[in-house]
Image 1: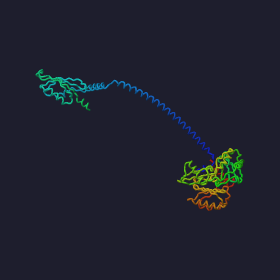
Image 2: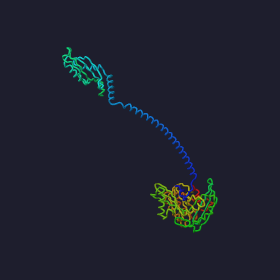
Image 3: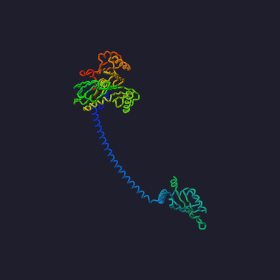
Image 4: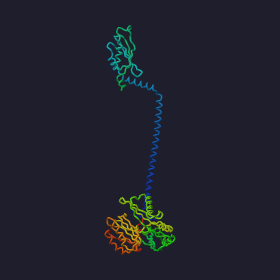
Length: 197
Length: 283
């Protein structure tokens, strides 16, 4: 308990020493706060200047990116679906050509070819879907040789869209056998697995 | 050198000591004494106030002529500046609410309006108990005196009662009591170091100190432990020191040491200690 507080004067004496010390302390504290504030303000100003520069460079980058984006859009504009499909087909056929194996095709045909049929020629061309069109011509000792060849081709999934092209009728046929031509689409096994996969 | 004028005012007298303080040394520069007639002050149960401001002011003319002394202290009798200690659970802590509480207490207990009384207080929470020490005086008395000082370009910066002035002289150690006996009032405070434990202030109408000592004895008995020190002061009392000394023996079972407060030898008999207390109490 501080009994000095019982003083009833309306204007009490103050301890000026304490008051003076307090004032000096407050003065020093104020200066310290002011210095700190100025320093802080300067730092903030400095940081804001740096941030401003950063923002500006980011804005420039953004503008550049937007320009590139619009260029790309401009370039992509004339490409229509058909063109994309054509390009895709072209690419597919290129892949197919690269991966196509003659020995594999001949092996596949040989496996299914009936005994009485002999292969005379084989030619390839690109199909519309980017696959390989194969045209074979053969000779059969039997009249039903062509049909048997078609049936045999159907048993192998690599051969699709099998169509008879030509059949030499009986009158014109030589004694060796009946000539015929068959056309089909050849999908190599790798191509199939690639497509399925 | 710092100079202070100390003034003691009571119903029929005015005492003044002008003091210079230099490096812890007290230099008495001058003293002054005057008497009042009975008509100057109107006495009430809560103190006194001057009936005529003009006549009252005239009494200070000679006193306030000294231009060197600007700072003044006023010492008032315990009967004029009373104190009370309240111990209640619901004493508020917010200063505004405390003020309202004290004003309400004065209205309820003494029928005193807020503008009639000036008070100061100390709020203390001791072992979970809320205690409030209120010190108060009639506003009429204080504002009349302050007006005189203001008109004479003097700063009256310290107004305290004799009991609290004396308390500044006491070393605040152990359990101790302070008894101040004045012409018409006795005040007893029981302290533990700096904390006020118990407080009594009563009108003292008897010339025989035995009644007083009986009351003091009853108050001290309430304490669980004996007191380490018991300090006496006879502030301008009509009781003789010798008569009081006879009664001391009754207090001996409850008190280790009984002491009179130190008095400066050159000042008025029995008033030296409160004057010295004021100097000790200066901020």
